[in-house]
Image (spheres, one colour):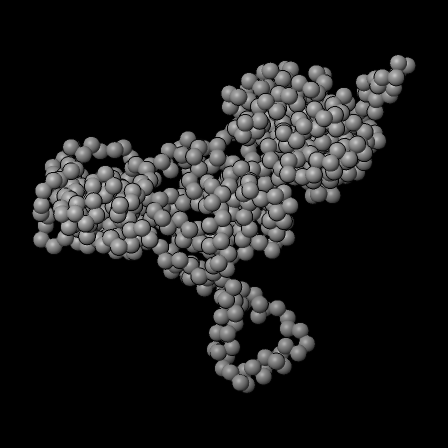
Amino acid sequence: MPFPNLPASLLAALTERGYAEPTPVQAAVLQPEAVGRDLLVSAQTGSGKTVAFGLAMAAELLACDRPEANASGRESPAPVKPEAERLPPPGAPLALVVAPTRELALQVQAELTWLYGPAGGRVVSGVGGTDPVAERRALARGAHIVAGTPGRLRDHLERGNLDPKSIRAVVLDEADEMLDMGFREELEAILETTPAERRTLLFSATVPKGIAQLAKQYQRDALRISAGDEGSQHGDIDYQALLIAPHETERAVVNALRFFEARAAMVFCRTRATVARLHGNLAERGFAAVALSGELSQAERNRALQGLRDGRARVCVATDVAARGIDLPDLGLVIHADMPTDPETLLHRSGRTGRAGRKGTSVLLVPHNRRRAAERLLAEARVKANWGPAPSAEAIRAQDDTRILAQALETTAEEPVDGDLDLAKKLLAERSPEAVAAALVQALRAPLAAPEELAAVADRGPAGPRVPRESGPQQEGVWFRMNLGRANGNADPRWVLPFLCRRGHVTRQEIGRIKVQDRETQFEVAPWAAGRFAAAAQKPGEDEDAHIEILPLQGGAGGEGARRPPLRGPRPPHHGGGEHRQRRAAR
């Protein structure tokens, strides 16, 4: 039997949902040694953890009656009985599931509702951002399972809306995320309020030190289950690291969405402001996009997610916090518009795709001057990525041609309905076959957003170790000038250097000597970066620096005051360092 030792009601629910066999984590929690024990489970995102803990606590839910009043008028603990096919009438909850976000808690409620539906189960939610009075009324009508966020569940417990006396199982879902989000105090309050004899099931993508301490404090003889290689690369996710020019992130997002065609895609940004700006730009370019950030109400978040699920939207732009725990079955593409700050964030973001056996793609957009940081991030996450440039407009148009041709042939292969052939004959009488075919191609191409032209970025391979600047003979760079000096712009190398890096898409190591004069500033650029610098520097800057002109210097450098050492040694392996911010050019 694929799902051993399960009652018929749960087997019926699994069969109806198309479950032929358990996933590794589901099989692990059903093993005889796991029955009745506290569990500390780590498994990859998208491995079926919700159904796993739903099955794991089945014995506790189906093997107890409701408490009955004793002679003193107090309720006695729920007696244990042989495993039944149906749950007792709803009353005080039998199980509590704690999740880090509203979306994940509501998804848990939906999953456990269908799983325990044939057994007569009632699952109630308690999440922040919704009406607490309505939740209190729902709890008063009785429930078997309550799924919610830490803060709201603690509030219901303290107010007496949630009666913990009958709870036989507590599940902490995405426990590592809840600790990262600062919910330790709420989790401890919930665990200390619930009966000591309960089962405690901790499910987490990773088991860092904080989770291990929580397990030691609140679990008894917990069975450690690791379903798969913890923290390793997900086999159903194809990682792509795409090198881009700094400040071309939004254009690169457009091209990635167009090139890696997916039924649904999620784009991750670091801040709410970036989410709002990128969402607006994508909508302006014709993408059916929605946004998710912490400033939205629960109703707005629900509408955005429903738009993705029913196909009205194809792209979701979100912050890390807003997107935690979201499960979209058709999500085939994840784009990291802002690089993750740590390996856990990279894996959690990427884990939104490649779920339940489906294939997915995770695209990391890497400014060329941050390649070293990206390589460290991927190495720490134990992820191997395919490196290359972001898709060019030409590559996207070529791919469009292939797709449009296939779509047109698929359309013409269908059997025509009544009247279509007559209309086709009339068209051919008025236009040539080539003109009719061209009109079909234009109609198929019309809904596609135009690809963006991106600056060429050379992929020189892995960065490798740094080479000391003194390790070779002096190497003369290419000299440029800009129309600001001491007298007409208060030029100073302290702001000139970061300004040049930002404007010319180069790093500090690729800028050599800087010579500030009265009416202009001359500076040296490494020969291997001079072409890229010249192309980027010719483009108008932001409003603040649009008046600054940068041109090649004819006849070499002159003047006094070199503020940086000359460029030395062989060509550096590649760029290092971080991003640079411009100080105001004019005071």
